[in-house]
Structures are given as structure tokens and as C-alpha cells.
Length: 131
Image 1 (cartoon, rainbow, N blue to C red):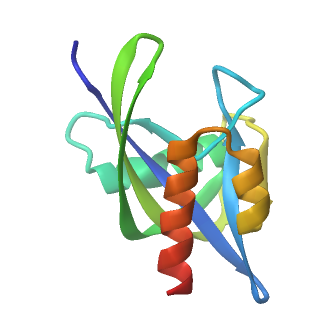
Image 2 (image 1 turned 180 degrees about the vertical axis):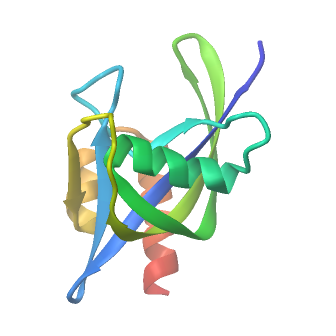
């Protein structure tokens, strides 16, 4: 079975001394919080996909700061390969997808995430931001 290539972002913003992370509700299961991600279009760089998907899913403009690595998992019977990036919030953006989103501290975000692999991504992002 063919691996589907996707890209996503762990988006952060500074709120005074606090660092906040962005999550959106999953499209297929609205009880699950996830990092924005989506399919890489033909000819599109994975970094550009991560930025585009964040804008489309969360209505947030961001810029890539660093690669976070890839996750491999199955979704709806298909193996997925998702490249993730640490991205910095720049501004709000218009979006057609009206997905619920939430900003939270590292601890709050950790508590909302249900998948261990996503928690590892969050941990990597936090380490890059805190040194």
C-alpha cells in the first residue's frame, strides 16, 4: 500500500513569558485535538504544505522555524507519512474551515493530546524553544 505524504506544524506563540501551542479539532473525530496537517500537493515543498494547512485548518499564518521529524501511522486503512515542523505564529488569516482551535501552555497542550507520538512532537518543539 502506498504511503501518503502529508506535512504539519506545531505552531507556537509567545504570550508574555508563556509559550502557547496551537491545536485544532480533528476533522474525522471532533473529540480529538491534533496539530494542523494535510496532503502535500504535487510540486509543493513539505514546508509550504505545513504553512498552507495551518492557514486552512486554523486560520493562522505562520513561518517555519525548524524541522521536528516525521511520524508514521495508519489512518482509515492507509499508511501515512507526515513531516512536522516547528512554526511561529505570525497573524490571524481567513479560512473556510471553521474548525475549533485552542491555544495552551505546554502542560495544557500535553493534556489535550491523546496520541503519544504527538506528545513526543510537542516535547521536541518545547525543547527547541527552551534550549
